[in-house]
Image (cartoon, one colour):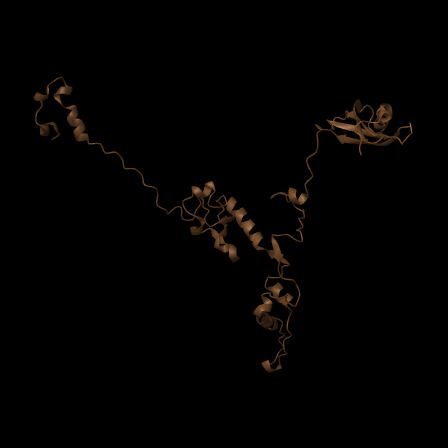
Length: 304
């Protein structure tokens, strides 16, 4: 059991501990003695202040010990350790977690993890399709027929002398159709991509809120293929803020293709001023020092 009271002989070996710290540190970088901490029976660690400019709050820790019934104190180890108020580097984070969009540069490589949740196995590259795959569930015959036609050798002469085509492998057909990918996007990968695009160029953005119409009715929208076609496309308007970006069909901006033919907002009518009434009022006698009785009939006050 660790003793809370430092051993007397070990606690008094301050000079021995200081010599060990000064030997490990740069000249003049060992400060005053701070404390002596008991690490066990006849084992004490002496703490000295570190005067290194880049190690504020750090301490030199020198551990000394002695054997049972022995009076000679020996050196155990010396090391630089942080104190309670020391300046520490931030906790180390793996590069895969530090990486942010836009950090990649020319020549950089970003390997994907083997168990990346955003991906799932695509074409395996084997001639024998895996169980329950699309090819094994009834499409194998159609693929084989296409392979026979594509790999057939044609020689001069009538059809009767043509050689029997050799069946091609699935890998050749898949590569020609652009389907030979080891991994494809998983459902999770599709969802997080859709959420990211919706947040950047979606219906809730300030630009979409002020737009005259959505991208769904814009002629500059190029729809995507696959399941994402139902909700996203690529903007092809060089003057739009989202040119070349994947945008939601509910997004919109002022560069809509039909913005010029859209009805303009109604404008209030110009105020109408009846000049006849204004002139009649200016001719009344009370305005010229007369009385109301001196005024003639209303019809006489108008212009002829």
